Amino acid sequence: MQAIGEVSGKGITVRGNNIDTDRIIPARFMKCVTFDGLGAFAFNDERFDESGKKKNHPFDDSRWAGNPVLITNSNFGCGSSREHAPQALKDYGIRAIIGESFAEIFAGNCFSLGIPALKLEVAPIATLQALIESNPNTVVLINLRGKTVSAGGWNWVFSMPESHRRALLDGTWDSMAVLGSASDEIAMVASRLPYVRN
Image 1 (cartoon, rainbow, N blue to C red):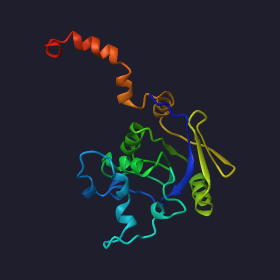
Image 2: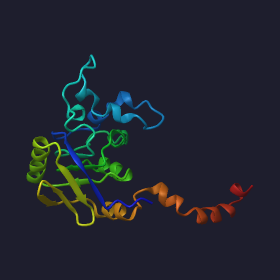
Image 3: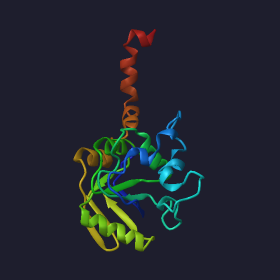
Image 4: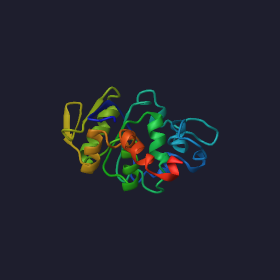
C-alpha cells in the first residue's frame, strides 16, 4: 500500500468558480474501456476551438503545462459525478488539487485515486494563484501530516475530511491494495466456499 505523506511540485492555476466535470472532461471523450489517455482531453473545449486551434489555456502553456499541483477556486468538480474527471486530471499529471471548495463526490473520487483535494480560504488561494502566475517555478509543498501548504515563503493550514487525510497517510486509500494485502485470508475463506472450491 502506498502511503502519501507529502506532495510537492510546481503549480498550475485554472481560475474560476463552479468548474464542472463536463468542462474537465467533455462527455464525448468518455466512450472508453479504460481511463488511459484521458489526460489528452482534459479541459478539451477550453483548450481548443472547433478547428483544433489552441486557446491559450494553462494546460498548454509551456510555463505551467504538466505541473502536478492544480490550484483552482470554489465548487470545483460540480455537476455530473463522472469519475472520468479526476481520472483525466491524473492522466494529465495532476497529483494534488488545492481549491476553496469541491463537489463532495468529485473530492471522493480524487481521494480514491490518491489525489489529495485540499481546501484553503479565499485569500490564501488568491495569493497562491498570484505566486504561481507571476513565477512559474514556484514549488508548492503539501504536508499531509502537518496539514500545511507552503509556497514562496508562505505557509497555510488546509482542511480536508480527516478520514481522507488519515487513509492517505497510512495507504488505505487504495482499496485494491488493501484487498491484495489480505490475500491469505481471502484464499482461506474461498477454500470454504463450495461454489469456489468446486
